[in-house]
Length: 128
Image (cartoon, rainbow, N blue to C red; front, side):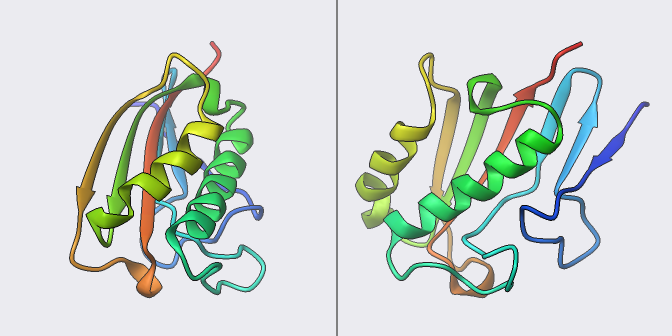
């Protein structure tokens, strides 16, 4: 199996035994991103809208490092600390992804790294 690690300093560094993303064939699988500032490693924002903006900046950076973008995302998984934040997260999310929107699952979880309110991972298509 052909497997290539993707890394960029424009997104938070992995803090464990995982990669920011893995490319295999024409697919890219990202790790979940939380609202960490890549420069400081600190959580950005106190509400889910601000955190979703940072999460999507981080994902955009990882996608760009692999040569792709939000237009090529085919599936996302959104993890929310509270489902009551769904509408606010969804409003930010909708501004970043073009139609046709990717398939998506959204789940509520007990806790996220660093006390974050939202985490998003995705699968994207890559050119050739």
